[in-house]
Image (cartoon, helix red, strand yellow):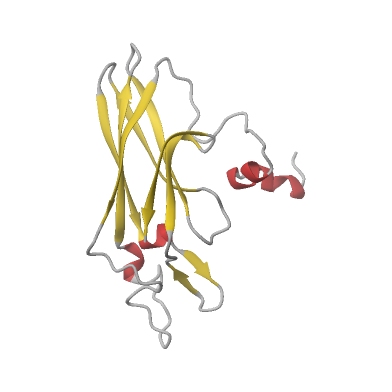
Length: 170
């Protein structure tokens, strides 16, 4: 049984901060194949509003349940190609992590996708990133705030096994 002070060790962010390697990382599974990650693309949606505060936010109104509609606008899409380089059909869980400037966290999980791929074949995996995915909570204004700057983009097998890296500038 874990004591209350040990619960934070179960979180991947705390594990990274304390340099602890988990026995079984998120997405871990037995596989009889190998996978290669290639062709990372970060495609920005130029039509999306990237102002710090959501464009439909109003200081005089209480946000609706679920938040402002613009929190769900897609800011960019991250795409990769996943190839089964082994000899048997197998599934792989590709994971997307983002380093948000000013968040105090080096990597936050923002998507994952499991694909069953035949040997020698490839699959395209896409992760849409919404305004909410890239925002941090501003305690002063009590709203989600989209920071500006360079966002680090990581795709891999787990938080400790990153295969591809890129960036997004807002």
